[in-house]
Length: 138
Picture 1 (cartoon, rainbow, N blue to C red):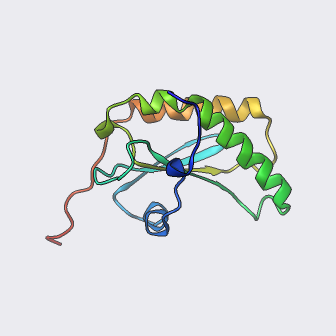
Picture 2 (picture 1 turned 120 degrees about the vertical axis):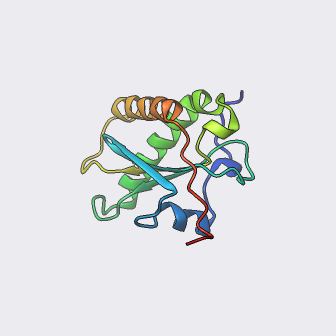
């Protein structure tokens, strides 16, 4: 598998991003693994066979765009190198959409980000898929 991070792997759809960040939504699963908070959705109707990913770094914690871009580059690079363990899973058992929120208040080294990314992808591998119940009857 090629170790690339192309346009088809980036989460750009505003409707799906809204679903990911909707408070109290039963379809969104989450866990914390310093320095990340990981939000993910299992969606069988997803068009892409590869999970679509979003990286978010808070403007409140990092005022300078240079700092946010540095962290985002480090996160994307560590994901790009370690995504193969997630992509190798069957389509129904891996999340379709993933958001990595960077929570640390300082710029951490690439080693810390890479370790956390590896652990979070491993955790995503082991988690059982949770599909929301049909909401049409309520």
